[in-house]
Length: 327
Image 1 (cartoon, helix red, strand yellow):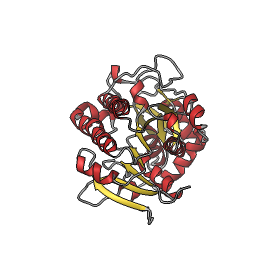
Image 2 (spheres, helix red, strand yellow):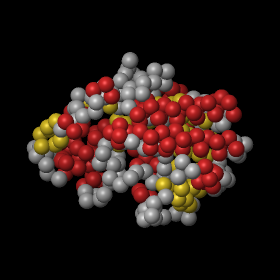
Image 3 (cartoon, helix red, strand yellow):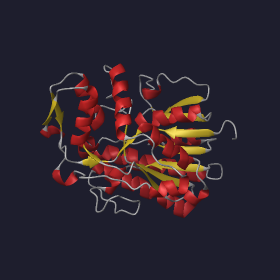
Image 4 (cartoon, rainbow, N blue to C red):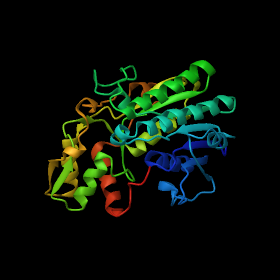
């Protein structure tokens, strides 16, 4: 393998971005980790990561100059940078448009400018773009349904990337992870929310609708799927790939699994503040992983129980860590 290949990772300080950055460092890549500028010089989840191959760049995808600086000299580009909170997208939609769409546009413009030097651009999408399933398992040809402002901006970002592939030939592949979970995930996500409440000995665990079903993928599997796509052949260019376990579980089922692992006697209760608007709620996400298996010989390795146990153990060791900052 050619030494010192350079990967620029936008949104490297976040949950998936930081895990992926660490994977790249273990694989001996040089990484330009682009972190949203903040006055505290906070590296987010990369705060404790030390490597001579890691270069941290404070910037903002909404700024074209930041994107140009980060991309210069890179072999691969990965875009994790996005606002992701669905409830927040209801009240601050313009912010989502600026970051998720305009930020992606800036990255595409700089890749177009440097496309002869870039081997692959991986745009990180979301299974939320599918909305409530018209059929299951959901493959990459499933209709896109913008059931929240967040999903609308992710659909828009993916479409922009595709337009640059068709119009200018950028080496694009779109990775569409289903519901990733694992250590370091924000407490705004459902699995950390349940784990945190259970570990803090709450007797009543507050949740929203518990009948909705999700295809949960452990963080290591999501990262390795993205890694395989990054190194994939030109045959993948212009294509979208689900990263899914091809199994779905209701939130209620997940609650009982966590309760069992933690040996807790808690019960669940519905918190109306956690419920999405009726027509915005996605009832089920169950993904097909046939395409990524065909092109990249990839499938997930960690089952739900193994992933939950690893995640619970991490939260036990980091129970008082603040995971609700701006990432």
